[in-house]
Image (tube, rainbow, N blue to C red; front, side, top):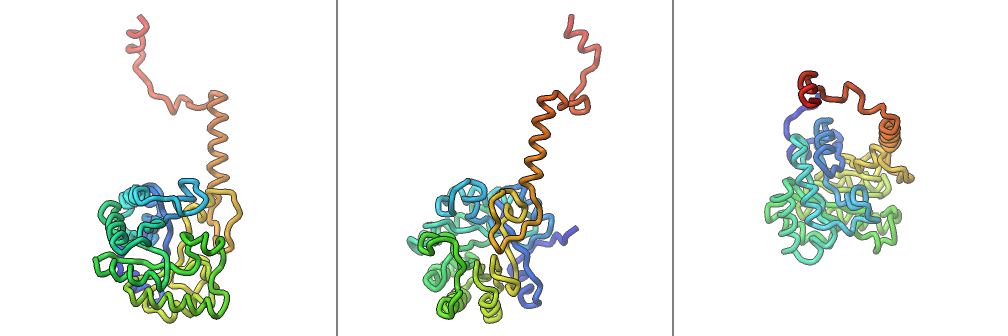
Length: 280
């Protein structure tokens, strides 16, 4: 049984201060949000990764604002305790500050989120400042930024040279100064993430960034093993639901074909006298 008290920004910052690791996971619908919430996850992210994990796209670029709002609303209905963050999808905030404010506002007002996440470093600082000044809480995201996968020529580790590592540090500091309450560090060397985490006063959340971050995040479907494709190096699979679900469905099909399901215990009954009336 987990503590059911609602997680707030103060709680997240306190965990950074007290060096208590912050568990964060993605969720995209009501049942997954409910399960994560009841299990004690501190932060639930409705990630634009739903484009790949739920919608079947090759990358995150195709998901729309309307689709993000739709999934955020489902997650909000399933969560009572966790702090809720909605991802800003590709081109929902890059075109103008006005678009960023309007679209972030939709995730809060229509989607039921408490904060938004967007990708990018120093170049996004003006947008982040405008969002924070508008009363919207923002989580930053640097390192491997999936919305820039084409520019990055694929999903590659970032910050492996002194020059690129320094740029990540500068980006992180700029995001903090712009008002981000936390920053995701994705696919960067653990030693670089450690330096960033120690320099920042706000929490870092790692995904492929090693053990020194203030918290960790994984994709729901990766953690539970929904798919059979090879796992990325940074992913740990805690269950193999692909195998479990597949075996359950195969068993169901066989029992239907063999007329073993439904059995008597799965069927509703009617009084025999009523049956006689029907048979007359």
